[in-house]
Image (cartoon, rainbow, N blue to C red; front, side, top):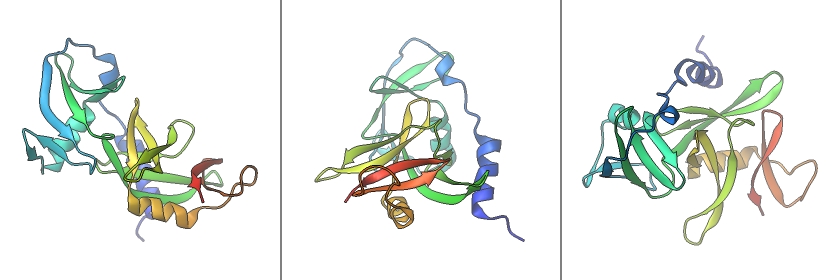
Length: 184
């Protein structure tokens, strides 16, 4: 029997959540690299979209944020890059139970699996034209993923009004907490 998607993602999160310790690395700035992470999640180097997913995943694993700036870092080099919005997109969501409570797991465009829980910030930020509040989830160390449109609509289909608080608000439940999706 095939393993359900939620259990597959939990296993992947546990097995592959390790990333290089970029927060421990503080090399001197080498300069600016002609690389941009576009709003649509594509990585572009010197005007060319990087199509090799393993290469994008490698760059994503050494990405570091300091204030409002983003860098690719190694123990000996640090290159500033541009990010149009945030570096990641949450392209899938799975819902399951853990310890008797609903739990949501998000998968990013670079393969990170992120639980919606107290260990990951969840924010509503303006996005688009006209700006609308869209959820963003922290992937790691201040690096966020914007919830894609498809995932957002799936969350809305699971949403409810909170037991306490404004009744014109939609929330999803995960890890024993209510997480806002917005107001209607």
